[in-house]
Image (cartoon, rainbow, N blue to C red; front, top):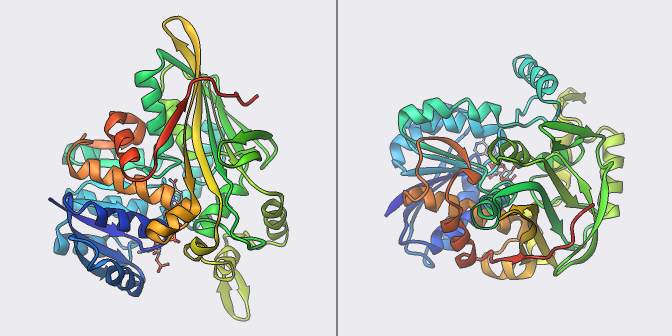
Length: 419
Ligand code: NDP
């Protein structure tokens, strides 16, 4: 019996909202709020009649904390799920804090304007101190830990697939399979084909900023940063086959390095086809990935935002994408004095996702865990005042929910390791 406010109504939100509406006994009331309320209205109309959840919609600019506070005061949610963009994390966290309502999201804070001098000063100090240059990190949201603790509310960060499920897999491996985890390789494989020469599977701006940045991994207590796409491996993925994958910086590495004792190395690999990489390099070379405004015919245009307007909307890829995703973690370590290795992973089929909720598997594999994290917070099963990532709670109820709500997982106790 709880009321959920979902902020954002894009690809990931659409799946999370479909799933929320499948769990009407928990989510009795839902408000879908976003910058473009017409998108919320279309989705609400599609879902009404197929769910017992009462759905309302609202317009909100989540960059404006006061607007979010006003909406929270009006709707009175028991939990807020932020599936807008990472740019809105802090304003929504502030609003939740002011109203003492639990907060949930799927991606850590990233500053929209990377030329903002105030942000830049903190960022450059952090680059020097920690040794990785990604625009996003947890420090901004971890700074709310004490305030959330004092307010008695839970802040659950990063409950998508990666981050999110990958960190739950780690907590599960730690709880049931290892005395010490020594290495973690997170492998994110998308074997889907949408038929376009170039498109991104989630928000193009966030996706391209992430992929074109230097890679980094955690080893022996510190970060090692490498030029973009400079470490490549091949892996044979169940359901997909042999794929090239590249080492990227990824946000859960930071949380896992802080929270998993004994871990010596954590890496993240994502698969990319050659066509994607060639297009991305070309766009980068001509300046289309720039995030700073340029003057064009008397107007200020941010190239990457203009590119977003040209590229296919990720939400439109659903009907045309065929193939599977395979995302999971390979762990090595020690159990009862003996060396052990396991691989926990999920295989998800793009067309099955489309048939169920009208979205491709990238949005599905993020939106389902967004609902699950929100549900565990709403039910009080994951309830700890403070701000936490998904590896900091009991993984068992989350792992059960993955099986129940569409993302079944497997454990391979003799996986091929990545060299
Ligand atoms: P989309 O671009 O499809 O959707 C973003 C939504 O947020 C849109 O509805 C947009 O509104 C809304 N929005 C943007 N700015 C504001 C604002 N100021 N106020 C209110 N609403 C706003 O993005 P995705 O669905 O692809 O991604 C959503 C989130 O999921 C992102 O944070 C992304 O990083 C994260 N993600 C996490 C993954 C994981 O595994 N952990 C994987 C993939 C994504 P409008 O319609 O007006 O543009």
